[in-house]
Amino acid sequence: MIFPSESRMIFVGLAMAFSGLPQAFRIFLRRSSDVSLSMFLILLVGQGCWVWYGLSHRSPSLVVMNAAAAAINAAIITLAIRFRRK
Image (cartoon, rainbow, N blue to C red; front, side, top):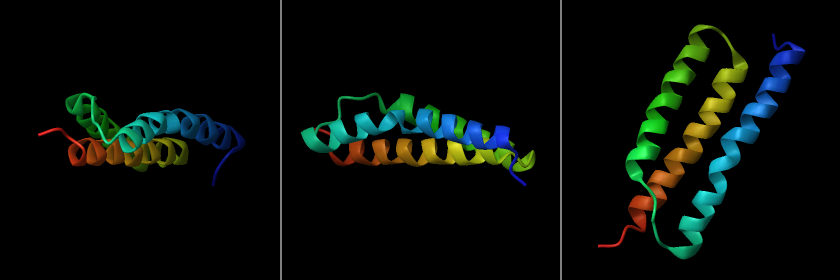
């Protein structure tokens, strides 16, 4: 069951999760990866922990927003590796 406060938190969390999209678009459009991969890897691990925590506490807002953020960060990592200068 999702309570009204959970719905609001999902909305707010998704807005924050999508904050990584401009970075992903920039990497894709410029075909260049001037980002710190270690930062995004650390974020990805942390978001994975929050997803696990949300699942264990049955909190849809934690699961949805952190899973979305993790997916975006995984895309940033993938793009950064793909377009890394050699």
